[in-house]
Length: 271
Image 1: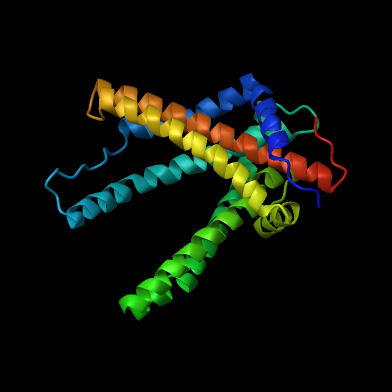
Image 2 (image 1 turned 120 degrees about the vertical axis):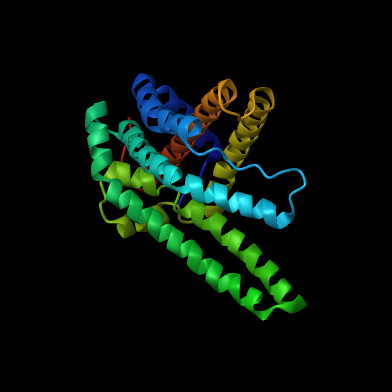
């Protein structure tokens, strides 16, 4: 298996972002930007603890905010998954594909995408159960040590699996695999011997996106706030725009990773 080329993958990501820009931009606006904007404008406002709140009160406020926003976030994720598969279908198609065909295909693949997410969540939960819970059950100084060691292994495994399964969505979009396990197995095979290189590539891009989002989001919050009215409208616009752009870049780097590995691993040729 040839070594994954991060530079070539980034160049291909830029090419993908520029291709079908009118079509992918429209899908991103409808499926990535507008749902996030609707939640930002009309969803629950995060609960902000007072400056004198205790740690437990802060955590209670955080849990309550998470509970209130969970249904909205699940809906946004589902709509975003449809748009994401549609965009990947446009990028990876070897022949001309219309927006209608791409979105129709994406709707058919929703159960597969959901099943993949459930399987990944179960895997993460199982790893946490095996690596972290035993140390917490032991207690004491030795238990804390076991928790720290288990947590380090857990983070490392999550990072590795993130890379190895990063091409699952492109595999689904390109090869029309309805079986989630088959899609995961194909991603695992494609990324063989390149797991940590792929992780480094995706991680570096995500760091840049995260820093940009943090700076712009923080500036928007500092200037406009998050109160009802103009502040929430403007902050919501900026946050939704950053989120949509970040999601589009994320799709591009996974698609570029898949295109490089699929071509080198077989006879497929992309346009």
